Length: 116
Image 1: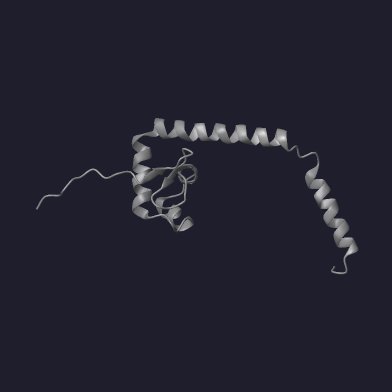
Image 2 (image 1 turned 45 degrees about the horizontal axis):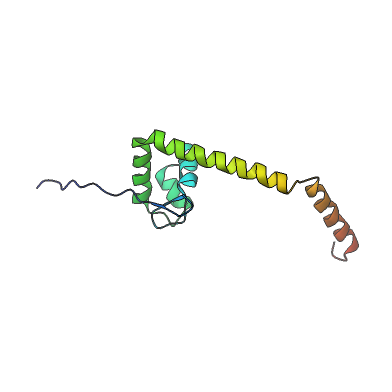
């Protein structure tokens, strides 16, 4: 008996904002690929994100391995957009010692409270 060889769809879905998610999970391609490229195995990814199916993770990894240039370009575009957003937010909402102010406020509250 021979095998029935059929093409299988890649378990990626594109959301309206252009984000790709794995299978029916909320895990993004960006997050999965970042972990995979840092050395996580498919099993590690499923352990870290229980909503993922192992077969979906392997299928997406296979897709990546066959389409590295395209996927890397997508990931780089996302990285650039994220960096541009970070810069914009820092311009709109400068830190100006915010952490230090919050720590001082916390210390003052602790000093004035009866709970120590």
